[in-house]
Every structure is written in C-alpha cells, then in structure tokens.
Image (cartoon, rainbow, N blue to C red; front, top):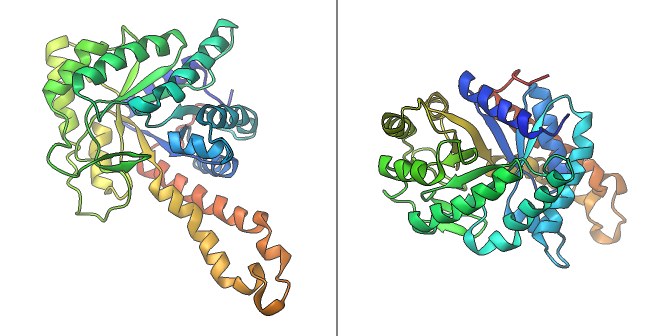
Amino acid sequence: MPIATPEVYNEMLDRAKAGKFAYPAINVTSSQTLHAALRGFAEAESDGIIQISTGGAEFLGGQYNKDMVTGAVALAEFAHIVAAKYDITVALHTDHCPKDKLDGYVRPLLDVSAERVARGENPLFQSHMWDGSAETLADNLAIGQELLAKAAAAKIILEVEITPTGGEEDGVSHEINDELYTTVDDALRTAEALGLGEKGRYLLAASFGNVHGVYKPGNVVLRPELLKDLQAGVAEKYGKASPFDFVFHGGSGSTAEEIATALENGVVKMNLDTDTQYAFTRPVANHMFKNYDGVLKVDGEVGIKSTYDPRTWGKLAEAGMAVRVTEACAALRSTGTRLK
C-alpha cells in the first residue's frame, strides 16, 4: 500500500531510528508539488513523509473560501490514488498548527480519521502536528495530552513542538535568540505529561537553535548534540534508552555535519519547505526569462502557446523539486531504504 498504514508508519519510524537515518518531510501545496515529492522519493528509492501546513491547506482549499480542512482532505484523497503509481511508501502529515487554528484544522481532521477507523478503514492522515511553542509549556502539554488521546484512538501519531523554533512559519514566529534550546527539564516535563509511548506514540520537535525560513550558514548556531543530553536525561529517570523520536525543524541551510549529529541522536524526520519551494520555482523563473517573448504578447504579437502552456514550465518545476528531494534523501541517509 503506497500510503502507509498505521502499522507500516510505526515500522518506518522504528527502522529509521535503528538505522540512524531520517525521512525527509516535504511540504506540498498542490497536486504538482505532491507529484514532485513522490517522484523524488521514488528516484531515491526512499520512503518519505508528505506534509501540509495550515497555509498550504488554506491555499489548497481555494481562494474563494480558503477552507483548510477541505484543502487538506482533498489533497490527501488525491494522494491515496496517485501514490499507487510510485514504488515507495509515504505517510501523510499535517505541519505546524498553533492553538488558534486547532478547531479549524487538526481537530476536524482527527474527527475525519476517527470516523474512518470506526468504519474499519485506515486514518486519512498518519500523523498531525500540534505546535504549542507560543504557549507556556504547561498549557502546551495540557493540550498535547488531549490531542494525543484523540490521535491514539484514531491510530494516528502526534507531533509536538514543546519549545520555540526561530523564524516564521505560517504566521507563527519567534525571535532568534538564546531561548531556542530545549532543556532537560523541558524534556522531563514532556515525558511526565505525554508518557513514553504508553499513552500513544508521538514525535518530539525539540529546539536546538533551529530557525525556519531562509538563512545563510553561520547566521544560526545549531547544537544538535543537545539532543543527546535530552535523551540521556529522560533515560536516566525512566530507564528507557533513547526514549524520544526527534523531528528536525528549520533544516534548510544546515550543514552535513549538523545533520549527521542529529541523526545519531534520534532524529527520524526532517522538514523541508524553503529549499523545495526554491527548487520548484527556480526552473520556472529561468523558463520565463529565457522565453519572455513567447510567454508574453510583446508589441502586439500573439506569443508562443507552447511556452506559456502551464504544462511546459510545470514539468520543469516538478523535475527541479524532485532533484532537491533526492538530495535530501541522500543527506538524511534514507536513499535505498524503502520498505518494498
């Protein structure tokens, strides 16, 4: 089955952690970017994660009413059909959802999957993210407990972000400062509130200096070795080795050494959006500049239909993004690790 079942998704994450590799989690905003991500995974012979942010879901819902649930459900249903043509397995995930958007996004989507599971089907999405990083840790974890219970009942994995990631992501922003580092105490409080699997499986987006968006190397100080301290601190209290499945947010621009250290310390998922957006758009810009007199009706001419046909430049965009996905698979060591 090209879309992972709950059992297969758990197996994917277990294999990644044991093998010290991670799955690229690619944000998509259209059927074409979905195909680009699937193509990249297939060409790398890697399984992966496809994710939709609140902004992406709103865009997918159409600019007439911008309904996030409609957009997310529509693309997920589309993915269930078209992914069958790719010889890899992918999980569907929803990215950052802050408190003020829970009722318009994650909670309704959890209900959709709960209804499917009640009918004997698999959930529509395999995981959802709760981004409570703008809340106090106490409030963040209290909401996390509620969502984890609902997710577990629907056979879904929850992702939680317990402390801020710098930069801006779909309207949630944090300053780039010394507070972008999760402490062992933060991790202990998380384990106490959410458990270590017995209440439902969750992925943990801990902060080690991560920043969303575009930045040059050297502008951000990443400390992926911090993840080892978080694992050790919780393991010492609870007696469970390497208790957390970590997520690497703000991965664009990271060095190979930083990624390798993160993988060694339990990262099983790394988000990519900024880099793949550029990889999708850059070939389009190149096409438009080189063929401006074909895509525009210049000086009364009629242009050249084959150059402004969306299929012409759309194929270039898909190919460009697919290449960036294969590069991500190589960097995260997931190349050639597909289940089938």
